[in-house]
Amino acid sequence: MKINQDTVNGIIENAKEAKRIYGGLKLDDHFNMCFHLRPTSKGITIVSTLSDAPMSGKDVPQEKLEETLLVLNENLKRICGDDTKKALDILNGIGYKERGTRTSDLEENIQAGFIKGLLSKQPDYEGIEFVASELALTQGSRFDVVGFKDGVLYIFELKKGRTFKAMKQVADYVKLVEENESAFRKILSVYPNRAIDSFTDVKGVAVMEYAMNTTNKLREEAEKNDVGLWYYEPALCFRKR
Image 1 (cartoon, rainbow, N blue to C red):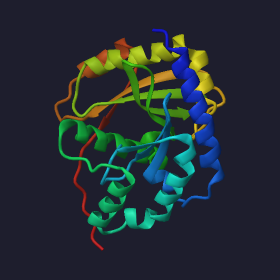
Image 2 (tube, rainbow, N blue to C red):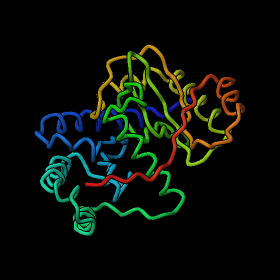
Image 3 (cartoon, rainbow, N blue to C red):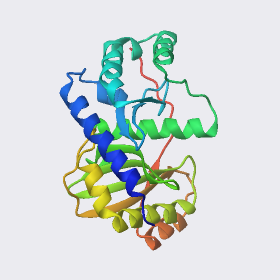
């Protein structure tokens, strides 16, 4: 599938400006655990990975990016504090929406948690660095999460349950990158969260919920499509203080 060059040019233009502004600001050390940037062909989105507004985005034009980032940074301690209502009031005032309990919202919670796992360098994530979320160069292909490690570009597709269709979907994403390698290289070389000068390989990974009675069929389907398969285990954990 060929991509639209106007879309590529638009993303590159916004990515360059986002990288320049984001890299020039002195933000709180924890800022990138709460927000990341997503340049699109139309502008720049500041995406939340906060539990109160997972994957909720605030679209801003280039000229408003610095101002919005500074407002978020100034309020970061209150946004991440003990008072959920106060956090939501601040986020809603800036333009972020609280997520509900619909299926799509559950998927966004999974996605936000996955990104924070990459950013916090948890051992299960194998040292893969976070690069981008919802990277889209065509209308029908949107990469949930993009990662990078040792010259390898990782395309992650996250599912709330288990499905065989994910393997073919991920394989198609890998093919899309390979067929449009030059465009992806240009975009990723100026990406604001984690710029990538070059990559030598592309790997697709389907991520889905683990089941106690999971069979080998999912693994066999992954191998047939030459993609990786990761599982997550939803858990409710308690910590006493």
